[in-house]
Length: 164
Image (cartoon, rainbow, N blue to C red):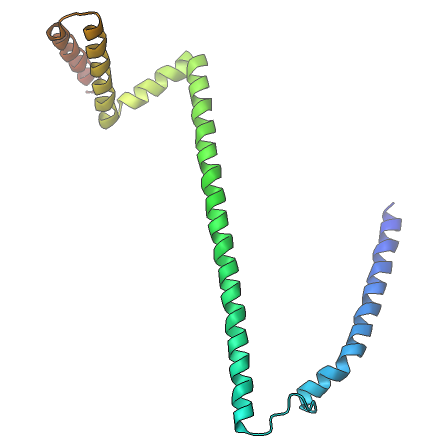
């Protein structure tokens, strides 16, 4: 099998060489005329013709660079959008996976909670959320909220004692 692929590779290489040589022979004559200045279409007769040719070259070169810049900018915007979408999708997938792991593994959930409470800012936010939840539940049950305040303060003191 390798010998057949090798023969095919050599054959296509030979064909490519023939086509390349034929292209050089066909195009070499006009190219040589342009380079040597023998082409009467490109020959400048006086100074304004030279300036016109230079201006045309500058305009077309600028046009090509502008198109290239627009294409690169468009590709950059497309890649940034694509990476942003894939990043959001990856974050959602990771959050879902973390949530399922925390529900299935109690040791991991306990470590996660301890890590959350080790950060003071996060633990304060969790305490406020818990207080709001407790207040809401007490209001639903028509219980006096003032009785829950000492319970919440005791809970906060225990949390702070554990952090120290």
